[in-house]
Image 1: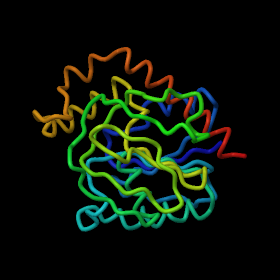
Image 2: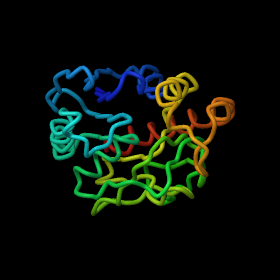
Image 3: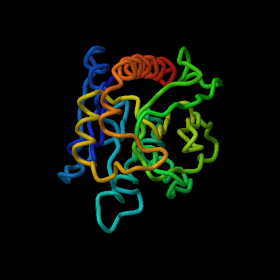
Image 4: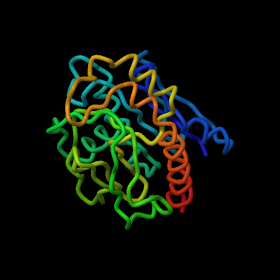
Length: 230
């Protein structure tokens, strides 16, 4: 399988998705949008991953490549590619599918549990509740003809599945200790004393959570590989 990913900032990368892909022997390629690299032809990949970033989907005046990226995502969806969006990536997919993206009531930063919907093939063999990393201030409505993935106390819509091939996840399954440290180092100013924001020390100390997160990521990606390629 050929995987292409869109990267918005140098400090948010594939994390443990890269380990999974390399262990599977899949081909990996990327477009670093912050370097204004050219996007590929959609025929050149099977699976598109859209990573997170601190920008908002409506900041097109500040990030000129957002308009082009949205058109590219729409084309990938229309061409029946497997598409996974994480955090900002999920918000971009929601926007492309016609759903509203807006500021959430709370910022959610840290380890918080998600109640997963249990009627989705892409989430088979995953727990009803899992701890994931969150780092967002915006949220989205569930796009038409999509199924909700789950919810947390701070954020009602934590994801959606469209056409059994397109997935938006507001939360992070891919995070490793290294990738979280990179995020903290570059977005330290967002860590404040609020109800749904944890300290950097606490987030980085949760070794068991990191291990469980990686395990659930691999289950999820294996489900995508099996179900979406049917």
